[in-house]
Image (tube, rainbow, N blue to C red; front, side, top):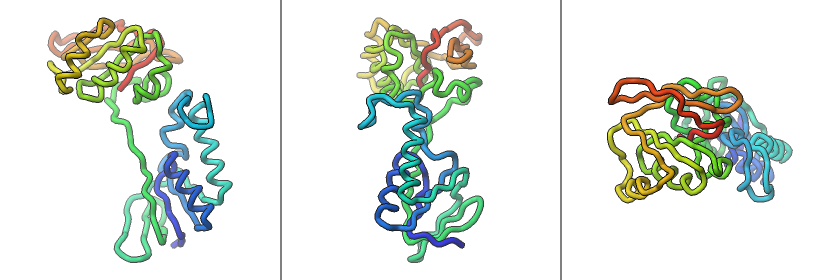
Length: 237
């Protein structure tokens, strides 16, 4: 069993930053990542809100972070999943799908996973028209047509934010009424460029290089609606 002074779980921006600090402090540092280093940063086509870069590709920024972390002396092991922790004793045990590690200290920087709706085309067009952060990616869709999926506060605030940026916002919600706060719903219905589809679900996301069209299913009428084009723009979950 390998022994480390510091084991970091997760190699997103937070995990890589922790790795840089740990390694520069002289600690024998290991970072374990279930996928590839860089985290959700790699999903962003362009990043314009990171200090030091007026504009940079998400994958390029993630690559720079990873390289800096490795240069600092941290070891990064990718495609390795942590399955259990034993934190009772002074020496901590990290179990993965490959082996066991012993550590003086553990940093958990696993980040978060976007909630997916699980329709055909969602994974294929992620980062190519399918987005999970309206505030992050909204400026890329200025003057364009976007579609927001959901009926809670998150969807409502995203729709309101995008209504000031996009030419048209379509809000798709599978239920008969919104779950969002009334004040948000009232604001949405007053927006002239927001179109609401209740009792409606996305069946499939289509396109070529970018999203172009979505198929919607009307739960009340029990029929599929075709041709709701996003004009190669965005679907926001």
